[in-house]
Length: 424
Image (cartoon, rainbow, N blue to C red):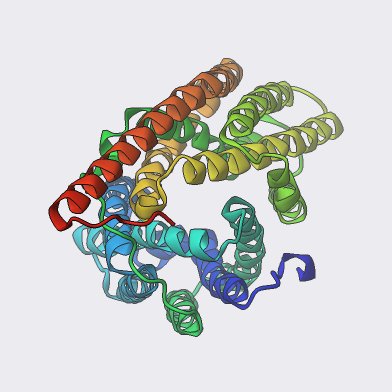
């Protein structure tokens, strides 16, 4: 943890806010679904449907709020999203049926997506020369916070009472409020300049949208260790069940220890494209090893699964670092929130459809499904470098076009006023 604490005060404020926020998130990620199935007594099918609906609606909200953060000031917008998320989370205790559940979970998911988009201009403004590296630091802190929250959630699940689950909901909401309060220690960021045609420009940037789709497909990998591996371990292997926690702990430790280091060598969009390709290869190898763990002795299954998790997490480091690089480097500074909101669409769709896809292919179909999923990751990684090159050409063309517009505007002003504008 000491190595994750940055030197500048604004960065430390963002890290502290993120740590508090993710401690609350760790409570929900570990015990949230159990709250609705065990305490609220909703059928698991309805919970899954409600989460899917929320996952579809939330990313679109992120784009709109990201644009708002660009033109109105990111800190205030981000604080509002955290407070809305706290209010929606507190509303979990009032959910007593399917539609009330959909309402509060949809509002919470929308506020979360909006907050991630609104935070990106802050990361870019205070991230120094390499905001991508600071984003990697935040991801490492995120894993620390979620792990701490998961420890508290373990007690809640062990108790299993309605009051214990309600403590989880209240603790989660309070964490979001504290994260918002911490941000008032952060100097405000003035709104960026409004450029002609900048409204919803990210949705017209086809190369950036292509990268969003590719990153979204690869983002399904985040559900491999949390959804597919536990179900596979229990249903298809003889490995001990405690290994589920072991695989999660292994992945978390690797991310905390090496995410910042992994991002340092990925310092250009081209390097990001190559990192996507390496990640695809790593995911294919990991999927193959997981499939081989079925039908083997317990010791062999354990060794194969642990090895697969290590290789998969290395691929996760490359994938995350590549996403940080291309999403920031290819986004115009004046539209950071809007562009990163669009980039979050891919991860949002993976969140909504990834679990069902992995269950259908890897669990229901079995061993062949793992090879199909691995091949999907590999093909996505291979497609990333040419997609990055296309996006770079488009970015250069857009920059040249903007430069010409500024020159014309300057010439028009000089002609109208009879003065010469000095270039800085």
